[in-house]
Image 1 (cartoon, helix red, strand yellow):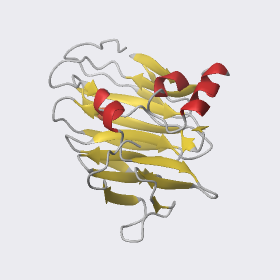
Image 2 (tube, rainbow, N blue to C red):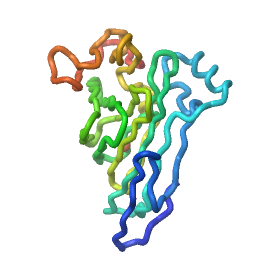
Image 3 (cartoon, protein in one colour):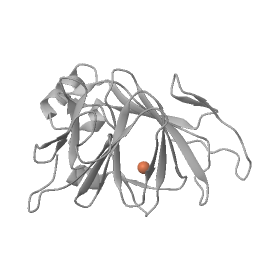
Image 4 (cartoon, rainbow, N blue to C red):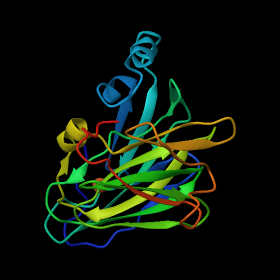
Length: 219
Ligand SMILES: [Fe+2]
C-alpha cells in the first residue's frame, strides 16, 4: 500500500532498475503464485507450485505520490522469470474502473502486454526503449517471456481504481506460452497466433485478433 508523499510539494524519486525499487518508496505489494488462482490454464501445476513454497511471481513498488485527484502516480512492476506449466509468469490483469489511461515504460528484461477490449485482444511486445499507451477501457496484463526479471514503469492517475473481476470472469483472450524458441501467443480457441517475431500481417511485436463468435472466451 502506498505511503503518501508531501501533498502539493514536488519531490524526486530514484529508480533502482537493477533491483526494481524506488527511493523514497511508497510501498511494495508482492503477488505470489497463489494470487494467480483461477487465472492460469494449468491449475494443477499452479497448486503444485504453491505447495512447493508459493514463490513470488511479481511485485509492484509504488511511489509516494498522494492518491488525490489530479495527481500522477507511478510504480515499478517486476515480474519474475518462470512459468506455470507452459504459461509464462504474468500479472493478474485488470481494467480501470473509470475510463482512464496508463503508460508503461519498459525498463529491463523482455516481455509484453496482453490487452483486451470487448472481443478484441492484442499482444504488444515491450523491448529496448518501448513505451506503451494503454487507452481507457482496455484490460491489460503484463507477461515476462525471458529468463530474467521483466521490469517496467507504470504512470497513471494516482486515484485510479483497478477492477480485477472482469479479467477473472472473462480472461484476456490469449495466453503467452513457451515455444521451442521464445514464446507463442495462443488464442482462446487454441489457435496459434504468432511466434516471437509477431504475426504475418502486422509489424513485429503487434498482434490483433478477435474472439471467435458465439464461443465463450475464457483462456
Ligand atoms: Fe492499469
